[in-house]
Image (cartoon, rainbow, N blue to C red; front, side, top):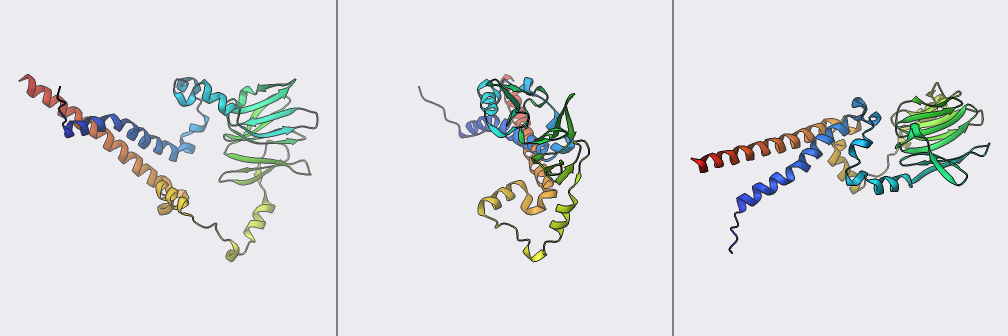
Length: 247
């Protein structure tokens, strides 16, 4: 049996099949650029997406096993920070802290006022009554100071200090030291080809880090618009052909 190969039909059908990933990439790019404003870091969708292969049981288990930090306190309590939550180890078993389930844990610090956790969704404090998120942001590390205070480093906020785990203020000493660095010695790292490629992709090369969302929004919306209108035009053409065939 001869196969009727029509390049235009193949092109149309393949375009329709592939347009969904293009629309997804375009729309999600806009959400990524505005994740802080939209609060997407605080919206738990675990149960809604566990049917996706990337969030199945095997994938979740792999993330839970990826340890990012560990700490043993003075009273012998052992803690593990993982990519998918905080765990307390006791009697040879690891028990997940419910309040931090599914949250990427970057660092841990023991202080007189409690355990400080630097997490992707903020700074957390364990005290006698339980757990509280005490500061918003993307926290990278935490360290106890000799005076009993704790310093945490957050993305776009720098180093913050706290003597009680509740009030967090910029580390003035570090800010002063950084401001005193002579301008001619503030040499940025070399721009490698892979950095240029990534910055062209995200728009940072054109608008800078602060305004790269303009590029992301533009490209994302254009991709979604072209994908959506492409599907609509294909649908209109198919309907027109069906009408002509039935006439």
